[in-house]
Image (cartoon, rainbow, N blue to C red; front, side, top):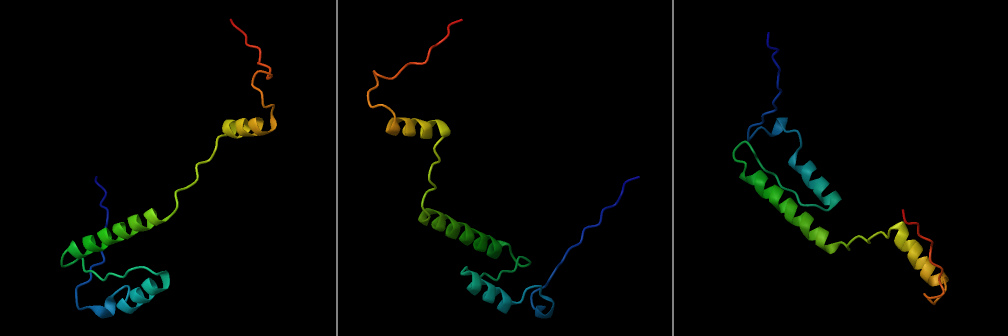
Length: 104
Protein backbone atom coordinates (compact mmCIF):
# COMPACT_ATOMS: atom_id res chain seq x y z
CA UNK A 1 0.00 0.00 0.00
CA UNK A 2 1.43 3.36 -1.02
CA UNK A 3 1.62 6.06 1.56
CA UNK A 4 0.27 9.43 0.51
CA UNK A 5 2.30 12.50 1.27
CA UNK A 6 0.70 15.87 1.76
CA UNK A 7 2.27 19.03 0.44
CA UNK A 8 1.29 22.42 1.75
CA UNK A 9 1.17 25.40 -0.60
CA UNK A 10 0.83 29.07 0.23
CA UNK A 11 -0.77 30.84 -2.72
CA UNK A 12 -1.45 34.55 -2.74
CA UNK A 13 -3.24 36.41 -5.48
CA UNK A 14 -2.47 39.96 -6.53
CA UNK A 15 -4.74 42.42 -4.75
CA UNK A 16 -4.96 40.45 -1.51
CA UNK A 17 -2.82 42.86 0.49
CA UNK A 18 -4.51 41.92 3.76
CA UNK A 19 -3.14 38.35 3.69
CA UNK A 20 0.41 39.16 2.59
CA UNK A 21 3.15 37.58 4.66
CA UNK A 22 5.46 40.59 4.37
CA UNK A 23 4.02 44.03 3.76
CA UNK A 24 5.69 46.33 1.24
CA UNK A 25 6.60 48.85 3.94
CA UNK A 26 8.29 46.17 6.05
CA UNK A 27 10.40 45.06 3.10
CA UNK A 28 11.42 48.62 2.30
CA UNK A 29 12.35 49.31 5.94
CA UNK A 30 14.49 46.17 6.08
CA UNK A 31 16.26 47.07 2.85
CA UNK A 32 17.08 50.53 4.24
CA UNK A 33 18.30 49.08 7.53
CA UNK A 34 20.59 46.55 5.85
CA UNK A 35 21.62 48.82 2.97
CA UNK A 36 20.40 46.55 0.21
CA UNK A 37 18.05 46.82 -2.73
CA UNK A 38 14.35 46.06 -2.43
CA UNK A 39 12.36 44.30 -5.14
CA UNK A 40 8.67 43.56 -4.91
CA UNK A 41 7.83 40.88 -7.42
CA UNK A 42 4.92 38.57 -8.10
CA UNK A 43 5.89 35.08 -9.14
CA UNK A 44 2.21 34.22 -9.59
CA UNK A 45 1.86 36.35 -12.71
CA UNK A 46 5.30 35.70 -14.17
CA UNK A 47 8.64 34.45 -12.93
CA UNK A 48 10.44 37.17 -14.94
CA UNK A 49 10.34 39.65 -12.05
CA UNK A 50 11.84 37.15 -9.62
CA UNK A 51 14.52 36.24 -12.18
CA UNK A 52 15.42 39.92 -12.68
CA UNK A 53 15.68 40.47 -8.93
CA UNK A 54 17.87 37.37 -8.55
CA UNK A 55 20.20 38.44 -11.37
CA UNK A 56 20.49 41.93 -9.86
CA UNK A 57 21.45 40.31 -6.56
CA UNK A 58 24.17 38.27 -8.29
CA UNK A 59 25.55 41.34 -10.08
CA UNK A 60 25.70 43.26 -6.81
CA UNK A 61 27.44 40.37 -5.02
CA UNK A 62 30.04 40.09 -7.78
CA UNK A 63 30.69 43.84 -7.73
CA UNK A 64 31.18 43.77 -3.96
CA UNK A 65 33.49 40.76 -4.23
CA UNK A 66 35.73 42.69 -6.64
CA UNK A 67 35.98 45.59 -4.17
CA UNK A 68 37.13 43.40 -1.28
CA UNK A 69 40.86 42.76 -0.92
CA UNK A 70 42.07 39.31 -1.87
CA UNK A 71 42.61 37.05 1.14
CA UNK A 72 46.22 36.69 2.24
CA UNK A 73 47.75 33.37 1.42
CA UNK A 74 48.71 31.44 4.53
CA UNK A 75 52.26 30.18 4.66
CA UNK A 76 52.82 26.53 5.33
CA UNK A 77 54.76 25.56 8.46
CA UNK A 78 57.71 24.48 6.30
CA UNK A 79 57.88 27.89 4.60
CA UNK A 80 57.72 29.73 7.92
CA UNK A 81 60.50 27.62 9.42
CA UNK A 82 62.58 28.12 6.28
CA UNK A 83 62.21 31.91 6.54
CA UNK A 84 63.08 31.88 10.25
CA UNK A 85 66.08 29.66 9.57
CA UNK A 86 67.25 32.05 6.85
CA UNK A 87 66.93 35.07 9.13
CA UNK A 88 68.54 33.59 12.25
CA UNK A 89 70.75 30.93 10.67
CA UNK A 90 74.26 31.24 9.35
CA UNK A 91 74.67 33.32 6.21
CA UNK A 92 76.99 30.98 4.39
CA UNK A 93 75.44 27.92 2.79
CA UNK A 94 78.77 26.10 2.63
CA UNK A 95 79.15 26.18 6.42
CA UNK A 96 75.79 24.45 7.00
CA UNK A 97 75.97 20.84 8.01
CA UNK A 98 74.12 18.45 5.78
CA UNK A 99 71.85 15.89 7.32
CA UNK A 100 73.12 12.37 6.90
CA UNK A 101 71.17 10.35 4.40
CA UNK A 102 70.62 6.66 4.53
CA UNK A 103 70.56 4.53 1.39
CA UNK A 104 68.86 1.20 1.49
